Image (cartoon, rainbow, N blue to C red; front, side, top):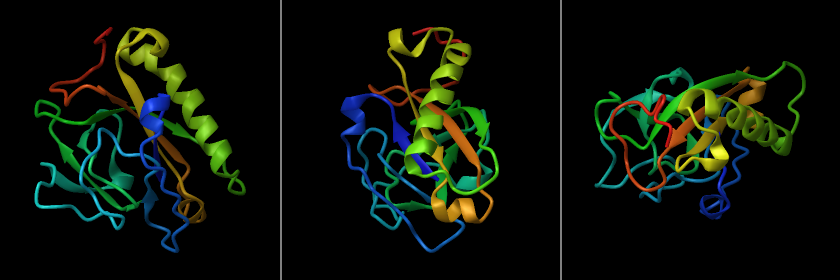
Length: 170
């Protein structure tokens, strides 16, 4: 899977292309809020709080401390949404089976699908919201292993949040 951000200033944060031979990993296109990860998904001594969770088991409603993740991603730090967190999964989109459509097509589907779902979850359209979204998407290697999920995540680019952002209308 790949994680991407939608706002241009955040998108400018490191872009990492991961082809990877592993069929079980995801890749990170941009990190959320800066963090201290390494390219192999390991963490520094100021690692985020949370339970290591297989990235493929993250579901809508889960909250994550994933700002320090870089490179190929196989696990993320999941936390209870009542604890401070970087992101919250708000929409799962299943892509059609078939050949891998390419990174650009996958990213286009993520931006379109997450933008469309944003207003329904936040209560305000993305263009006027102070919040942003990111997304995990399948890599070509993950696609070969059956990964077709785009997972949309809402983030507050200014700070960690506590509680769900559902209906936040900000």
